[in-house]
Image (tube, rainbow over all chains, first blue to last red; front, side, top):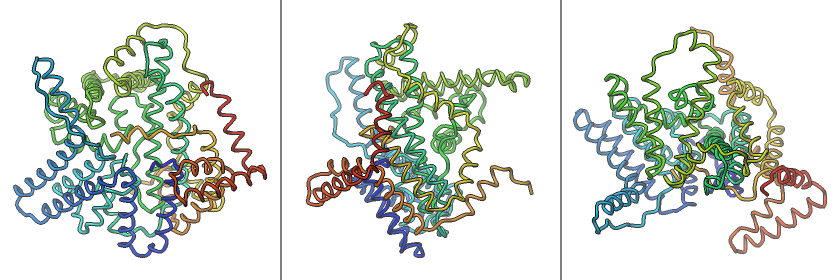
Length: 469
Length: 93
C-alpha cells in the first residue's frame, strides 16, 4: 500500500475515523495506531509483522534492563547485546545474499569450486529504518538521553508508526516518545500538513515519475546508445528524481503524522543549494546523516583524533552509510566517493574571508558540489559497474545532440533546480497564511488539487525508491 | 531573552494553533468527495483493477455509473482536459 493510491486514502480515512471516538482516550489511541500500523505493514507481507514485533520487544526489554541496572559494565553489555541483535537481524535479512555472493565470487576468482549455499530470504520492507530506530533508542537510554519507555505499546508504536515505517524519516526516540507520554490535545493546524502532503504528491506523481519514465530509465538502461548531452541531462534528471521521490515520501509522512497529532523532524532542506559536501549532508536525508553522525562517527572518535583519524572516521561512516542503502558494491563505491570528497574538503585550506564571502565563489562552489553529487548518483542508479563505466565514458566522449531529453523533462529539471533557491522562509510564510484558511476552503482546495495531480500523473505509480532500503 | 526572528514567530504561531480529529476526518471526507466528483475516472479505473470478489464487482458497477453520470454533467471534463494537455506536451507518450 503506497501513499499516492486510493487504497491508502481509504485506509487513512478509516484511521482518522477511529481517532475521533478515541480522542480523549490516550492509551486506546496509541493501541489503535499500533493496530493500524501493523495492518499497514501486513499489506506487504504479514509474516514480517512478527519480525517487527520481535524487534520492538527486544528493544523495549533492553531499555528496561539498562534502566534497571546500576552496574555500568552490565549496562554496557546489555546495550552491546541489543545493538548486536539488531545488526544481526539486519545482516541476515539484508546482507546475506550480498555476503554469500561476494564470497562465492572471490572463491571463484582464486580457483575454488565449492560455493556457499544461497538461501532464499525476502527483504522485509523498511527493515533498515526500524532497526535504526531500535538502535537509537537503546543507545539513548544507555547514554541517559531519553527516559526509559514504560509501556510496550509505546515502543510498538515508536518502531511501527505507519507514516515513517517503510521509508523514514528516522525519528529519534527522544523526539517521538515524549509525544506519547504527554497526549496530544489535538493535531497541528490543518493547512501546513495538507500543503506538505499535496506538495509531496505532486513531486512523486508528476515530477519523479515522468523524469523516471521519460528520461532516466531509458538512458540508464542502455547508456551506450545516447549522446553525452543525453547522459548529462539524465544524471541531472536522476538527481531531481531521487530528491523528489524521497523528499515526497518524507513530506507526506510528516504531513500524515501531523494530521494524527504527532510531529516528525524535517528530512530535507534544499540540498542542491549546498556550497560544500558537509553542507550537502546537513541538507540531504537529515535524519540519516545526523543518525550516522551521532551513533557512528562520534563514537568512532569524530574529529577529535587529528587529521588522519578524522579522515578514517569519515570514510568508515560514509562507506557504512552507503551500504546501508543497499547490499551491493555500487553503494559501497557511492559512500566511498562521498567519504573521499568529505576528506578532501576538510583537508583544503580555508579561503580568505574576501573570497569566502564572494557570491561568485559561492555560485561556483554550488555548481561544483552539484556536479560531484550528480556524478555519484550515477554509481547509485546504475545496475552494474559496467553500466557506470559505459556511462562515464559516454559523458567524457562529448558527443553532440540529444534524442531522449525533451523540453518537458528539461523543464521539470530546471523548475525543480530553481525551487532549491527559493528563499527558505517562503514556505514558512505560506504555511502561516494557510493556518488562517477556513477548513471548508482547505478541504475543497485539497480535493481539487488531488484530482489535478491524478490528472497530470501517469496511469501507474512506481514504488518509492527508498522502499528498497 | 533573545527576541525570536520572523521565521520562529511564524513557526510558533503554527504550532500554537490546533485542529481536532473531527476536523481532520471532515477534511478528508470533503476533500475525497470533491476529488471523486472532479476526478471520477481514476476511481473507476481503480475499481476495475481490484481482485475478483462480490464487493469489487459491486464497486466496479457503482464507480462506472458514477463516472458516466458525472461525465454527462460535464464535471469530469476538466480532469480529461488536464490529462490530455500533459499527454500532448510529453513527446514520449
